[in-house]
Image 1 (cartoon, rainbow, N blue to C red):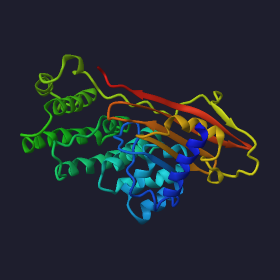
Image 2: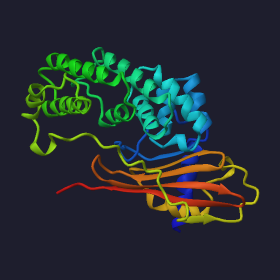
Image 3: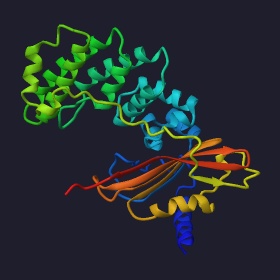
Length: 321
């Protein structure tokens, strides 16, 4: 009976979202770091994401990526999205994709591109309308650190000075600890190159407002959840002789996939399948509140007459008592 219930659930959502892009644009995206307010079922082809970016908006297109590492599925599409992001007003989704791509892909052009982007990003901070002082995320700082070049110190100094100005603008409504943490991080990074801007006086001013355990804290890159052992197989779908790409597979009728999906067929859950020809990612999650939830992410590879399934992420969050 369980598999029958799963099939009924997924068939209902398959009908609701039968037109891939058209039916998905207005649906909010969710994931291990997002807030969830309803049930979500999606099947997305990577090439449709680029079409949406070119014909509608990049932000709408990236809502379909849902923080899935599209660069491992479709390197050409993700590169196109990255270059589009360089010239867009940096929304949270756009900045996340650009940062995630730059932390995962290495080439000789990346440092200049990333530093140029954050040069513009800092200019944007002074004009954006926000109820609280806008602060560049730790992941964005990681992208700057990884792609450090001769521009970086001047960008960090401009960012520091911009935060000082914004502090006055948001005097009645800014988070004191976050502000001092970010300023301290900037000065720590400048100290690494012995930049004279990072004086002891400045550092001491901010450290007086930070917990002692955090005074030397610099953001570490988040775990890239694509690391997996190719020899460890978590499932196999056999006997698929006529399957040429994942566009031909129906996840609502395959017993192996349904068994993976079944624990997430409930309220406050999502089933998200992104594919490109012979590789796909299945993102499953359940988040009843902002601070509780669990999920799994699988990588699927089409090899000859079978599909190999690897578990690449198994995450949980808890409400601390």
